[in-house]
Length: 382
Image 1 (cartoon, rainbow, N blue to C red):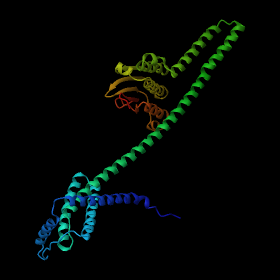
Image 2 (image 1 turned 90 degrees about the vertical axis):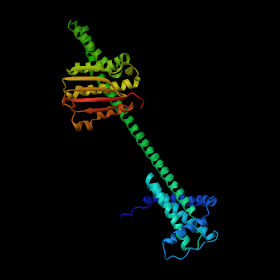
Image 3 (image 1 turned 90 degrees about the horizontal axis):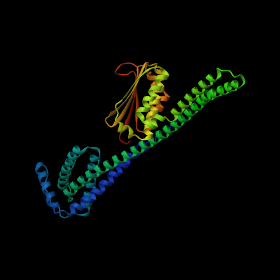
């Protein structure tokens, strides 16, 4: 059985707003009474002149009778009328913009004065035009204040929601990176087990065999196996903590990464460093390491998937940012793979840790071939 929708949730904000406007209108009427009472304007004379001017416009009206004093009934009626004028001005001021707000305020004041004259003409009540005008002006100011407070409240709520979303995204990003790091550790353990450990086992077997048989060919094989194991260990060490990056900086590490990728995949390489040396040295250790990891991951993807014949890396200074471009002439990246690739998502997450951004252009807009990976790192703190 379907339930009727709860309308209180949708009407509560409107009711609260109306209640605030009504409160502002009552306060405006009270202040207007104080201002009108303290003014030096003769309300009775002004009302008589207004009524006389209006009476002259309507020949059917009888003569104007001047009222004596301000009684309690007139006070109550004027306070009610001023509250209505202030409420209308407050609502108009809340809903309208600056120029239109001023035009409407002028119209409300004019109508209030005319209304005061008509009341004085037809009813035995002493009216106060100044009080009505003051109430309209104060009501307009109240509507403007309420609107500004409402906009500030909305901005604050939006900022709080945005901060919560960013906090949630940050936590998710951290968890994702932790999972990726755990995966990389497992891959590293697998490499040590499958490559280095197996090589060492084979060396041990050959050494035992050499001790028993004295075969002269075994020493050569043993030395070759040791060299291979040392190369594997050095590659793993470089993957964990690149020595070139630590001693020579980001540019040299990027060039060495490109060279090793070329040796592994057999493509031609081109390296161009136009970035300011002082700028690169000014990068923190964390920034250099994460930028290097992004370059390393891009080169790894190129070696695995691109089938490129030529790969280049360029570093250059852009307005307020460092631009790193990894370009190849391979087969490019399919849009579907670009949207679903977990590796590319990991690269974005790593870049986000230092405020950098990674983008992929496939194919290259200039040549129509291959892929361009652009890493943009802001030079100002993020």
